[in-house]
Amino acid sequence: MLVLVVEDDARVASFLVRGLREEGYTVDLCGDGEEALAQGMSQPYDAVLLDWMLPGLDGVALLRRWREAGLVAPVIMLTARRGVDAAVLALDQGADDYIEKPFSFEELLARLRANVRRAAARGEAASRVQVGTAWVDLRGREVRSGEEVHSLSGREFALLDMLLRHRGEVVSRGRLLDRVWGMSHDPTTNVVDVYVGYLRRKLDGGRAGESVIETVRGRGYRLREQEGP
Image 1 (tube, rainbow, N blue to C red):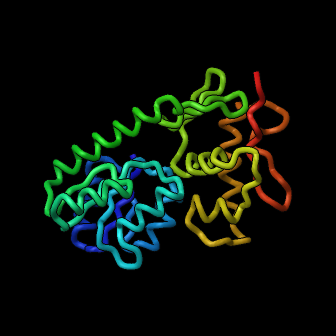
Image 2: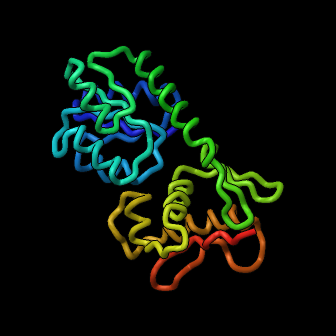
């Protein structure tokens, strides 16, 4: 699973990142609220661990901005603030859980697993989507085309997720580069085109003809609208 840790205390951040990676999680780290605002929307995170007190943008304000922008990943707030009022404020702003510092790492892992399970249950009905003649398992991050099953890498899944969110719309290379790779526009890189090629091979199933991912010359890429039955 892909987890975003937002924590400005270097010692706590190192403890969390090291422990989560040892448990098999893939972890991204941000130490600043403004940086985390963009990072949180750049990848399809399975969960977020969010510190309350952050430079740039505090955790509650950051969480509110994320929810307004459509972030659906479960967010666990980590804070030294104590009391019912602080917990209520965090939960009212969109937190899924609230843990006071200092905390047990074992308890954090248990709450992380529980929140991810609940989020998966909520999304069960929307966990499969048709793309062309292929089916995408959003939970398992797999493409099923005929008898073939292809796993999606993190970047492939993030790219496909971006195209799905804007299905039928042209998404520019610069925007894909920014949201999927977190990079400023670089006219010399072809990384977007390369990964679109990877996705096409998995989604189109080797069939000749037009790809489900359309190239709009000079503008970017568009995922074709799904045809009716």
